[in-house]
Image (tube, rainbow, N blue to C red; front, top):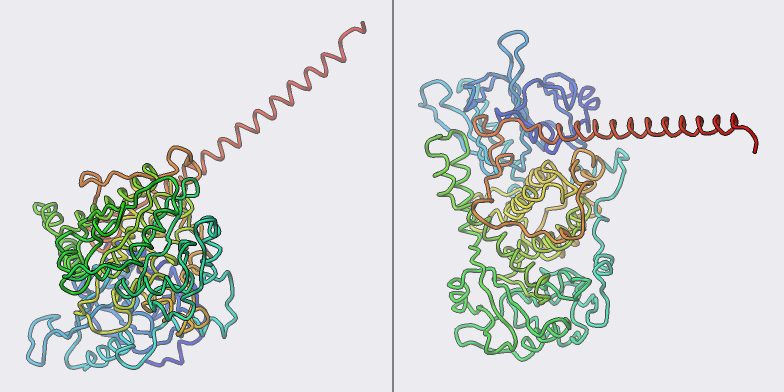
Length: 619
């Protein structure tokens, strides 16, 4: 391919994309888009090139083995950001089949067939994706095209395994060179400002930058809110008795009752049941900071058997004998390995084919909905303690960066309407997930080819799924819509933005991501209209200021709009939100027309009264 011949077209189509993953997030039921050109000009590669996106390879004799339409022949393009296939229509007016996949979505690439392979489409490449789909491309052996495609995919989909850099850096650098500007998504979350919104500092709580150099806890943020009674030296001692030095710090405070949600990791009690006077006193400080209650509830996210087993590794849980006025509850949420296997089964059930007679059984056997229900039920229990009982709650699991984040973030979403707005939800993710050290790099596997890594797990995906479940029960309580949530999930994988890169705040500071990459929130907030829920303005506050979803298997359902979007037999195109917008627009027009008629009627009445007064005899 003559790359230089395409530069004019490339410049003409740059930054034309407005979808979550360009064409892929709004793909048709074939896992691909039919009829090219929406995001760029029609040509050999009719998509909108992003800033910093460069061609790496192109093959014009590749067959996409579509699981629904069968084999289609066309051209395959690989850039440093995406894999793009476009079929060559065999008949006039036939729309092309398009597959557009960001390389960050790819989990692994495998060669299929060998030199002795016989049979049509038996020789090529199979691509396994993190977004629930697999893709197969067949090559002709005599063309020797498979090797270069495989090598380019490996190098660009897994740059960290080949001494390269993720696309987010090239994208931001090109944006800077070309003068792209706009609202800075990195400014969404400012820790001290968010604490002030919660009413901190106050008589019982203070903000501290004790961890500013990340020396006490390298997986915690620089800014904490802690009980005023705890000195800095005291905090250092408490940290030593918690796994990974993740001592309890404030996540949220009820402005009315001062009941709080704090988060931490497990105590290091071990098999011998070690005690620590500082840790016990510290939990008393948290309890005493809430004048409404003389109890403190600990919500341990784990099954009790797992918490007990952790004692053999030096961890464990708080003894109600050692910690006075404390009650402990186990929430039965399983570990990352169980969740990874559960999602694998969901993928098997949803893609590429399904058996209608066994569909419900297949989904039940994944246990995915059971796990989502447990997360929802745990959050509801926290809400009940904080809101109804005015009791402060401490949340932890083992290390406090997976299940703990699910529970604190979801319960805060239920308690505080601010987090149900677009900006508030962005703050919630920045605060509870990013700043408190959920290991996005390890859990997602950005840019590395270790697809079987035991640290990978869909923990954050489960949180987003849980939020979607709540939005289905309270569909007018959220400012954002389903597309907003799907966009976040898509760019969790895409590596186009710096938001979800690295494992901790300390790593992001060291990598200088705020200056070297673009925030996902910059992208979303620059085109908010497509992410807004048209029903949100009608939500009435007051009694439903706090949301209490029903955490029952009868109410929890599979999110087909996300997991089944590549399967035409399971997920038909969704037009409900657009229809709602049209109806609300029509309603606004009718209201406006009614007001105009009332105004005309009032003017007519006033004119008639004026005429009557002028015609009346003088008295």
